[in-house]
Image 1 (spheres, helix red, strand yellow):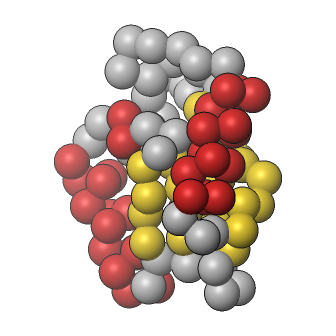
Image 2 (cartoon, helix red, strand yellow):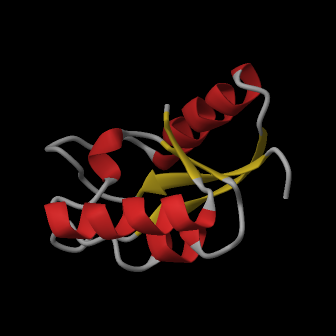
Length: 99
């Protein structure tokens, strides 16, 4: 999927903050434009007690080589969960970006 990048945004609070989804999408799209990536509509995570098991893993398994997060704070709080994501990305040649 060459330079196509899936956006990844949050539907709830992360790191004690909320940001409307439409603004997150605009920032992610702007990041893609500046960095020569073709923006593909974002997956919005359902934040339940800081969990990112649904949409994040769905985005990672879609086959895109780039995933653009609105914020680094959207990664799981658990070090072990983050390490699983990093390992999956290394094995799958996925680059994580943070707008």
